[in-house]
Length: 393
Image 1 (cartoon, rainbow, N blue to C red):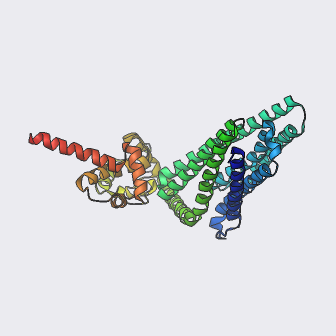
Image 2 (tube, rainbow, N blue to C red; image 1 turned 30 degrees about the vertical axis):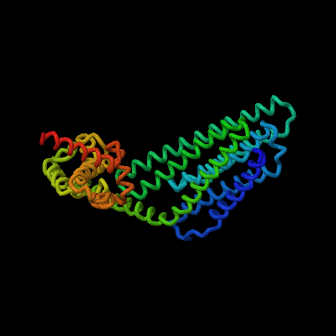
Image 3 (cartoon, rainbow, N blue to C red; image 1 turned 90 degrees about the vertical axis):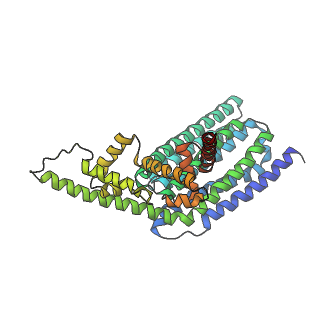
C-alpha cells in the first residue's frame, strides 16, 4: 500500500471520527438547568469546531487535485484551521470565565476570520505566484498571532482562577482547571507543529494526522465526560464563594462598627495579636488543617480575625500562600505516616489528611517534595535500615 493510499484511508477515518464527535457534542442531551448554561454553550463551540474539521477533511478528500500545490494546501488548511481555533478558544475560556464569549468578542473574532478567509481565497484564485505566496505567508502569520493571543487570554484567566483556588481550596475544581490547561497546551503545540509541517512531505503529515485524531478524541471525550461532574464542580465552587462572601460581609459590619466607636484605640495596622497567634497555634496542633474544604476565611473566623490580616500574617511568617501552607502542613504529616505505618494505603493516608483522592495527594506531594510518596517512603525506609545497621555495628 502506497503512502498516498494510506493517507486517503486515514482521511476517511478522520472524517468519520470528527463527524461523530460533532454529532455527540451538538446533539447529546445536557441538563436544561441554568447551572449548566455555560457548559452547554461551551459544548456548542466545541461541536462547531468538529463540524469545521470534518468539512476540512471532506474537502481534502474530494478535491485531492487541489492539494498538489503547496500554496493551495496552506491556503485551504488555514481557511479551516482559523475558525477551528476560534471555536476551541471560546469553548475552553468560556468554562473559565462564563462571560468571556460575549457578542463583541464573537464579532471581533468573526471579522478576523473574514480577513483571513479573504487572504486565503486570493491566494487560491490569483495566478501570480508571488502574490499567492505572500498571501499564504500572511495567512500563516495571522493564524500564529491569533493562536498566541488565545494562549495569552487563557494564561491570564488561568492565573485568576488559580488565585481563587488559593483561597477556596476546591480540589475537584483544581483538577478541572488543570485539564483545561493541558488541553489548551496540547492545542497550542499541535497548532504550531501543523504550521511547521505545511511544507513537509506527506509522510510527516501522515504522522501528524494520526496524532491529531488521538488528541481530538481525548479532548472531545473528556469534554463530554466532564458533564457528569460539572454540576458538582459548579455547585461546590459557588458554595465556597457564597461562604466567603458571607464571611466578608460579617467582617465588613464588624470593621464598620469598630470605626464608628470613638473609644476603640486599637492598632488597625496589626496582623494578628498574641491571642490570635495562640489560637492559630492551637489550631495547628489540633491538626485542623486536615479538614477538607478549608478556606482562608474559614480559618480567619476560627481565630477571630479577618482574611486580610491572616493572609498577610501567613505570607510574612511562612513566606507562602495559604493554599501552599496548608499543603505543606499536610505533607509533613504524610511523611510521618509513611514511615510509621508502611502498610497503610496511599488512598487512606490521602483521605485522613483531607485530600479528596490518592491521585491528588500524589501530585501535591510530588510538587512539594520533588518525588512521589511511594518513592520517598522507599528511599527513607532504606536510609533508616542502613542507619540501624551502622548503629548495631
